[in-house]
Image (cartoon, rainbow, N blue to C red; front, side):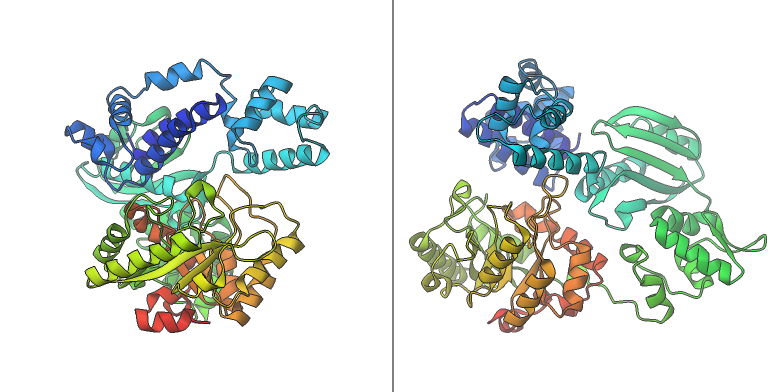
Length: 570
């Protein structure tokens, strides 16, 4: 039982209670519980089996602890089953559609008989939503567009979901004797922001024993295939996992083939044909003779190329760069010296300033910026000028107390609809790190949104633009903005662009990160951590940066604090 699975139970309960109009505090406790569980580095199922105290976890009281134990021990939750009986089965899924919250879902159900995404789509097309409260043609068009976006992502999973299950399955299979190698391939290995399925390659003489163990994986819902060299499962969340056993002499060529991308492989095949060679998953051949296949390095070398990191294998110029010896030396996680975007209990975080600082120091960081929300983010308990001033004093006191790490005084300040700052300049100038962000009014026309953000980052106290497109992967599309114009102004103003490392954001994405680099922008990789466990999300930002061809020199938080402060100063 993975933590993400337990979190799904709590999220589903919160959604159902929300639609039913239950107590907001009760709903929030389930949502907070889901976030806590999902972000935990330790496996909750193991903690339950060991008889550990679950209530020591932040946001987990006795009620949630009992439910966690029930889920782990039975694989079910009676309370959730009872809730499901009270509403149509497809109704909670409406909340996955951008722009539809619990109140709208309930309104659609009660006034238009909408009880699923399919019936919502039909109602919008038929114009049956037109006369509902504050709704017109534009609302129906927006709903149809949001449904289309949702369906486009159906069957795909966030990168962190793939990582969780890849890690769990490989650990589960490792006890098999004679297992020599086990590597997840496909989109996961290329670190794409979403994956469609999971491919795992193995070298194992006891292939039948390996496959027999694999099909007994506890989260398997269906066995799609069970053979001695390939088996497939569908997990309870719908993710398909394939395990293939390959011979040692062809493992490298198979890993290259199943890692992809398809367009990268086609480009390699074209290059091979020009050299009189043939490439497939079984090796590199000259005629019938296999000249390479044992390792990826051997395969690339046979084509006159150095090994190309998996993150670059998208046929975006990597083969040409490799042939000229001009591949970038991609940034590494170990080169990050600090995190410039983190929240505490002062707003919607789970830990204190000191706890966040100590956790950052434990990671080997030299600095962390505490950047709690400004007052516009009411749902997070955002700080006004007076509250922020007191908060900055608390940060100073933590700095006096702790050694070995610098806690930077910061704030995440909202860019309001007209482009002005949510806080006045008198308090912003007291901060060492000012992060500007958009959290509301996403539906502005592109020209207005671009003007809004440009005006915001033109404020002389702003250092960083956070999650610049506002997207949530598989949940919310980016807002309409001319990012090229924003980047131009950021370069001219000396404002740093963020790669938000949270796997729900990864914003800037890989393509925009590379564009920003080529336009001369400075970038920073931040976690936007709301708990000490989320500081570990930095690796997902690194993956995105690597896919964007970024090197250490392109990212400001690879520098010691003195140089960093010079880089972010306006």
